[in-house]
Every structure is written in C-alpha cells, then in structure tokens.
Length: 347
Image (cartoon, rainbow, N blue to C red):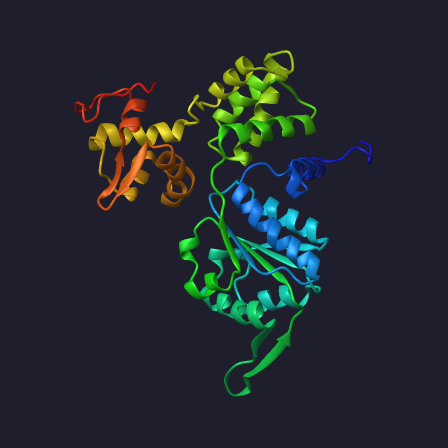
C-alpha cells in the first residue's frame, strides 16, 4: 500500500478537524453578524466600545443561560472587536491552584481568558480567582509543612469571561466580581430562521425561506441544535431528494429524527407520557422520572426540562414536576384521565 494513502486514524483525525473548522466557520465574527440576544448584545457593545475608546482592558463578564445559545461565540466576538487573543478553557479542567496560575501568568496585557462551565471550578481554586480578578495578583503556597511558603505572582491586567448554565452554583463573592452579568435566552423562530439561512449560505446548501422556518420551528430555540439539524437535513436532501431543502424535505428529515413540529423529541415525549400514565400528571420527583425514562437526572434537568418548562408543557412545584394543560394535549388525553395501564399514542 502506498504511503501517500492516509490510514484510518489519520482519516478520522482529519474528519474531526474538518468538522471543527466547519462549526467555527458558522460562528458570526462580529456583533453586526450576530443574530438575536439584543439586550445582551447592546450591553456588550457599550462595554467593549468604552474599553476600546479608553484603551483599557475590558471588565469581567459573566454569560449565563442554557447550552448552545452563543456564549462561546460571544467570547470570540468580544476578542475580535478588542483585537485581542482569547484563551479558552473549562471549569472541570482547572482542578488545582497551579493550573490556574499557569493560565494566568501566560496571559498578555488585555487578553481574554474564557472559562466555560465556570461553576464547575473547585471552590478552593475559585478563591484564588478573587485576587486575580480584583488586584491582578495571585498568592500560591509552595511546599508543605514547615517549609511551606507563600509566593505572590503578579499577573497582567486581563479580562475574565465566564460562561455557565447554572449561575446559582456560583458563590456570591464570585458573582459579585463580574462587572456585567447577563443572561442569554432561547431564540424566537424568526431569529432562528435567519441563523439557518446564514448557515446554509456558508455551507453552500440550497434552502428556501419555508425550509428555514421549518428547521427553526423544531430547533428548540437553540442555534447549536439548528445547525446540527441543518447538517442532517442537507444529508437527507442529497440522499432522498434533489439536494434542495424545502419545507417538505425538512419536515421529512426531522420526522426521521423523531422531532415533531413543536420541537419535541422522543425523550421529551417519553417524559410527558410517563408522568401522565404512571403518576396521573404529577407531582413526581426528578429522580423518579430519571429512573422511569432511563436517563441521568442532570441530563433531564439541563437538556430537556428547560425547554419543556419554557414552552409550557411542564411545571415545577415544591412537591415535584407536573404536567400543564399543554402537556396533557401532547399526550392526547384529557387532564387527569389516564386509566391504569393505558398506553398513550402521542400526537
């Protein structure tokens, strides 16, 4: 076999690299290209514009909200607008003070440190960030026992951008050190349709307005999901259509993924079905639901529940989760009418 032919591992690595490049290419590079999140965008434009005018490092920013709404994208845009580098890491990676010290001391003046899932930084490490964010210094303990000593490290003035899906898990002292705390919300269908059209244009994928609206209506208000659906719908249109995405093609492709016109997937329907059949609409605890649908609690709480609650299919009460009237409509049953052992046929 010729040495010029790449082996399987090389092909896999190349495919992953190409996929990463495609995903990065879909990210809007500037505030002007970013769609939605108008309040957050306006706040960031004010802060970034003032920092550029004064030629000062940007103050620290905390971006919170569900996954896939653009927190990492906004960090890249801020760096682009400031003409600075952005260093990216995540909370679980920083498990000891030395890791944090290495990141901070390697920064240049005015650079951005972006920490995704910042709420997962260990509390012992989080305390070291306090002085770094306020005084731009960090005190590290060297050695142990009688030989232990504290070493003060001066660090360049930098900007910390934290991203979290669970802002309540951050301590109050940590939250208070961010000049701006802003929340990203789910996108409406109009903005998502614009994002779908832009992504398809970058991917050289032919799609009409109705096809974009169909994908947007099933993307759960999340651009990341919309882009994932575009990739599958494009594959579907090439294999079972004429290569163009219309409303009919998009609907057929997404029905194959078992995502209905309301954006509900198979797991969403299983959750609603189990609560209706087994617990007469609730209330029922999250742990019980997780066991019933064979899924992890944190997955239900972070992935499925936010959408179901925001769209009005489910509600939280002190006693547990309960179906709303809309939730009962999805199951095809009247509220409370679930004879023992009846199997639901979801509409």
